[in-house]
Length: 210
Image (cartoon, rainbow, N blue to C red; front, side, top):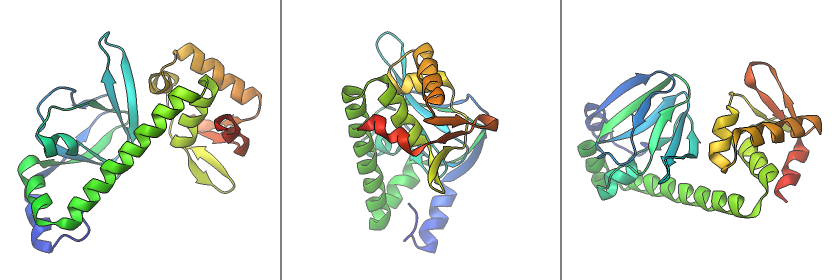
């Protein structure tokens, strides 16, 4: 995001930012509150979630190091559209509104990177809508697992533990249903549980998305 900034611009941005550490389960921002800062996740993981009219929580995304949140509210001065809660102990850089807007105005490169990030999120939202509308619960679980994984040799692996309840909130299913699906995928050889909460995904898992 910050490549292309001059040394002076970086110094100004640093003057308006602070590094913060939060434990697991800490609410970083709350849906509906005024927005004062852009946050960049430096280490750890966090979940972006909203609540419906009945108070049911829906996880919109899980973010990792290098990703940011809060820029939309700073751009249009609207309240926070979602809450963000840490999954692991996490480090963040918080950049205040004034510094962020100043950099947007003075750096076309940074503005383009922010726009690219927003477009990427819109594409991800479109993919999630398609997943919820067209896939059964096995397909929805498979989509989450593949999205959370990374390439390791010829297969894919999830390196960090993701609780069943969190998966359920991401796909609009019950925790019990997710547990049954995960057990079925394991029995049929689509996934292989590993120590420390890691999961190996076999190549054939993608067949559920066809």
